[in-house]
Amino acid sequence: MSDFTYFMQGFRHSIINARNQFEHALQIAESEHYGLASSILVISAEESMKAYAILSRALFPFIEFENYNKVFRDHKFKIESIRGLVAMDALFQAAMIHIQEPKIKALETDSSNMSAIRKQGIDNMVKWLDDDIQGRSDFDTELIWWKKAQSLKERGFYVSDKSATWVTPDSVTKAEFDQTKEYVSRILKRTERFERINFASEDFKEFGKSVSKFFKQRKESRKKQT
Image 1 (cartoon, rainbow, N blue to C red):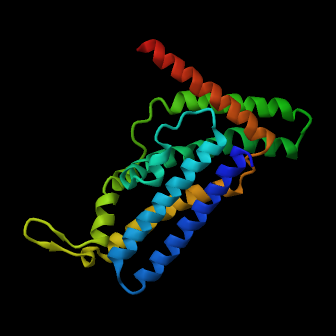
Image 2 (cartoon, one colour; image 1 turned 180 degrees about the vertical axis):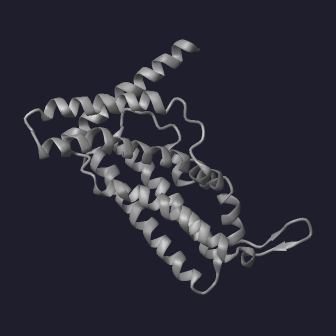
Image 3 (spheres, rainbow, N blue to C red; image 1 turned 135 degrees about the horizontal axis):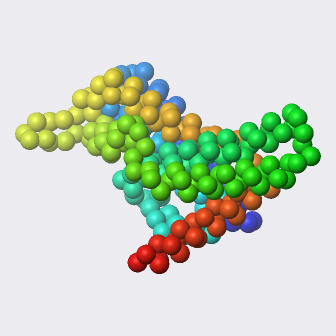
């Protein structure tokens, strides 16, 4: 079994598990146990994050993932890394705009120049990476909420003593559950999109090579600066 096939299997297993956790959380919420339900939703997001990390190993074997093993044991790290999942979603959307949509339009008119269109799309994609990622510091208000997700998960699971006051999972409200469900749903959907892509296609092989070149250049540039 190739490394690509192995990691793609892990990606699919993690997505299935994340979906199951999401559905179980909704069932628990029907009994108005919003604390426990919210905690399991956050775990579903963590499993989505794990799926994304495994997928990255499959697609970009040339990139060093120093923290890869943390996605299997470090819950705080997974929640913090959801920011990377949102970035991956932006990458996916850009790939659709710069690579797939021009090809679809070409098929509707003249497909004779498909090779040049694909190359131009990949070049545009790499330019997008260079222009957009470097200046990105924070993505949106959704990510600000994720900074509190670990605390919410713990509050939904455990009874705690906060300044001589007992805080129980029942302190998590339906409004908090609904907000958690919305944000986790977005994360799950972002990851599920990758299930529908044929990553073994020539387009994505070429794209992978271009991304590899881009990150290698950035790494070399940073070494020179230091």
